[in-house]
Image (cartoon, rainbow, N blue to C red):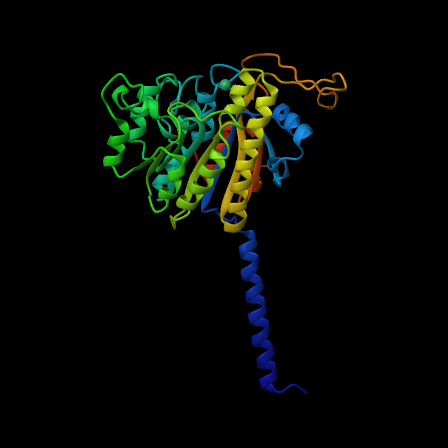
Length: 372
Ligand SMILES: [Zn+2]
C-alpha cells in the first residue's frame, strides 16, 4: 500500500522529470543563435579548384564540413560577376553591377553584415591576402562606385568603423614621403591612430595585438606574397585575430579572404592555385578549431566566383596521375560555387540558392530580415 507521503513524493518526482524534459524540448526547438560568425571567401574558388587540390593533396577541411550548399553568383548587369559585385551580394544581400562596392546600381549604399555586427555591439575584422583596399574586403567595409579607386577606398576605411584590418596594403594609406604611394600628403594610418587604432607592420610584433580593440596589421605595402613564399602569415593573422575578437563578450564578425586563388586562376597557373587553396584550407583549419572549442560560432565558407574556367580532362599518365589542368579563360566564369557550413544555424546554408541569400541568412540569424 502506498502511503500519502509516497504518492506525493512520486507526484513531485514526475513533475520534476516532465519539466526537465519540456525544458529540453524547448531547447531543441529553438534555433540557437551563434554569437560569432566567421565567413571565409575563396576568391575564384569553385568545384574545379577543389577537385584539383583534393586529387593532388587529399581531402580538404572544407569538404569535411557537415553542411553543403551551392549558390549562383551572377551580377545585376552580367552573368559573369567580378569580386566587387559578388562581395556586395555576400556582405549586404543585394545584387549590384560589376565594379561597385557596397552600393546598388544607382549608387544607394547598402549595409554590410560587418556594419550590422558593429550595430549589435560586436567586434569586426577583415583579413585578406590581397591589399585591404581590394574588392572583396572593401565590399564589407565601404560604399563606393568603383573598385579601382584604391586611394579613395583607403580614405573611406578611416571612418568605416571596422575594428581589425589585417593583411597588407600600407601603400594606399601612406604618402610617398612615408613609404606609401599616395600622391597627396595624407597619412591615413596616423589619422586612424588618433582614433585609437594600433598599427603593426612587422610580423614579429603580432603579439602586440592582444588587448587592442582596434588595430591595423599590414605586413606588406601592396599584397601579401604568393603562397608558399609568405609562409604561415595568413594562419598567424587568423589566430591573432580570433584571440583578440573573442575578447568581446557580445561576439564578433570576421571575414577572411583567400584572395590569390583568383590571381592564380587569372594566370592559369594550376600549381600556384593549388598552393593558395592549401593555405586557405589551413586557415580554415584554425577557424574550425576555434569554433569547435567555442561552440557558439557559425563558420561559413564560400566563394565569389570561379576563375579560369578550369577543367580536369584525362591526360597523359605521367602528369598528375593522368589529370590535366585546362583553362578556358584568363577571366572569371558564371559557374555556381559551393557553400560549406559548421556550427549553430549552419543547417540554414544547405541547398541551392543565390549569393545574396548568404547575407540574408547571416542577417536573419542575427535577427534582421532584409527586404528583397
Ligand atoms: Zn579575379
